[in-house]
Length: 343
Image 1 (cartoon, rainbow, N blue to C red):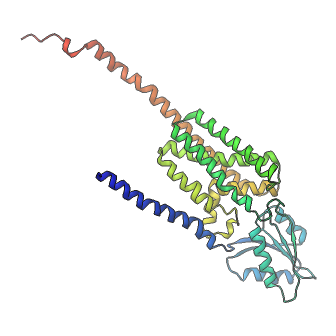
Image 2 (cartoon, rainbow, N blue to C red):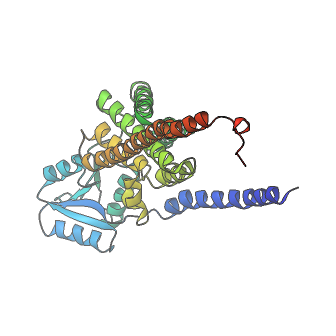
């Protein structure tokens, strides 16, 4: 066996365990360190009862970001606008817990447990689910599971364009058409068939399309700039980190810092947050995730178009530059037909 073959075998033996270790870290570490970190919650009601509730949240330093509201109506509005995940209303009959399982069933359960544990012994804590998760997905499992297939669809489209050598307008149109079909199919399955998202059908289809387009454009854009090596970089970003750091199955504020923030800068996390906003909250807090997806789409498509122009100009310039040389050789004739020099 040649030395080159031995080196390739050693590289494979070392690379596979390294990739598996990285994947295990990316998925297991955030899940094992789930805890509230500046989690937005609300406190409403009259003092001093509301002040006591606020102090109980603030005792866990760095865990909660407390917002004060005048009454229950204001707290409900803040939950519906995705300003807070939940709120506690201080009243004469004891604390009233307002949650939103549509925002995160994990956070809703965490807040219920925290308020119940802090309430005086024997106190009954009333719980109202202001924005409930759909009956087709009460635990949010299906919504969380949707991130990986969308990432794989975008990765597949971008990789195919890179490996097939498509560039320019043709590549951009292929990405857009592929993303649109995936978005329509995903909306049909998730909304019409399974009922796990319950917003406006066409808006949800548009969000799913934009998510796949952002991922696919990112993959194809880096592929156009770096070649096939770009597929490895985008696979790391979109599939490994993007999926595990998305926070869709829990909440970005429950992941270790800065994992939660990084996940929202990548298309899978931004797409999951945007889909949750349009599916359950009438588009509240959709601006940031939509901007993230739009930037990834625009930058990726721009890279694809620029690479297409470079290849076109290079292909057109090559024969033009070679033509004078060919004409000179033709006029000179074959070397053997040249007349001998005079002595």
